[in-house]
Image 1 (cartoon, rainbow, N blue to C red):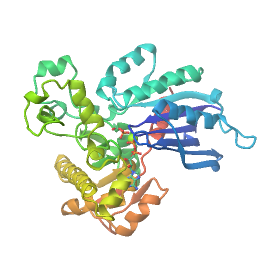
Image 2 (image 1 turned 90 degrees about the vertical axis):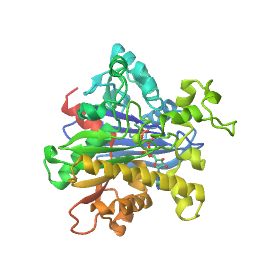
Image 3 (image 1 turned 120 degrees about the vertical axis):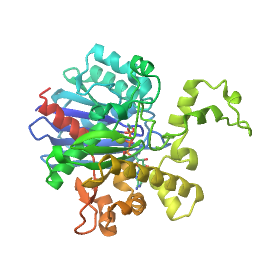
Image 4 (image 1 turned 45 degrees about the horizontal axis):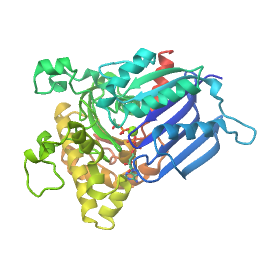
Length: 418
Ligand SMILES: Nc1ncnc2c1ncn2[C@@H]1O[C@H](COP(=O)(O)OP(=O)(O)O)[C@@H](O)[C@H]1O
Ligand SMILES: CC(=O)OP(=O)(O)O
Ligand SMILES: [Mg+2]
């Protein structure tokens, strides 16, 4: 048997899937380790035999300090037998697909050679919560799966269709050119998955598909898709721009950092003159976001505290997120000339956060989007890839899509016959 291993190193989780290598990839093993930015990590793991569940572990508490150790734990499970059966052996793995968040201006997947590895290593600074973790895993795969090819899939590739006046920043053009500074955008594998699934669901040719897509997880972004292509997205040079995340500030006034001083009651740029730029970057990427307001990275918990326990700071974080997300829906409504066919929610929060969807829909209902509360509740636990949560006969659809970056990579690698 020939198999494809797909690895998706997110900022707070790592997701893994192994498929049989065939025209329509069929699932053999899938799993995730979540909570990598929290005190406790959880493992989920399911293996299948001809579509039937063979072994299932749900949210088992584990200790995993980083992405690479989570990957090792997953591989130990793959290697262990259930009864006398092993669903897939390491020797079966023919190709490993790695989700690499920052791929520079590369529009296509690349076979990872030593040269490509170093090229990606250089980009690590531009995705400080992602690229290095993914590259550590590439390293482990090269050492452990000696027969397998390693292919890099870039989250930024999907956005290479964004027009120049949108991807250009209003700063010195020579500097931008010299340092390849531009809006790149991320979550592209998820948006490619969403675009394909929505186009099938709505029975609209991909070249006619206009949607606003929201990928809301530990990192959150919005994307305007016009004619099946990304024409704008909220993340930028790095995944820091745009919406706030679990530990990321999202867009703030760039001067704010010069006034950021925890030990002084006075505001002055001279007080922060000793703040090194990497410290600033660290604060905005790792010590900001809703964790800095509420003390937790768990948006499910924030929602519960905000709406059930009436916790003031949780409510503040919740309302801030709803505000920022709704503003992008408005902005992209204009980008799509008022003609999107659907608003799509995806990512950990987009898929599980029914309260968040309700709150965002309240804000954007003036545009014509609707939400059926019963379907909204069902969507969170549904195993369907797409759940239509709009009201009956709504012209504009509101959809929840259980996005799957691993399956997107598997389909692409098989189509490319890599
Ligand atoms: N019931 C829930 N309601 C809202 N958010 C949730 C819920 N369960 C999990 N989440 C959030 O989903 C996020 C993880 O999203 P995910 O897209 O899986 O992760 P990553 O960004 O690491 O890829 C976490 O911030 C978590 O708090
Ligand atoms: C790009 C990004 O922020 O990804 P994730 O949400 O998986 O951390
Ligand atoms: Mg993710």
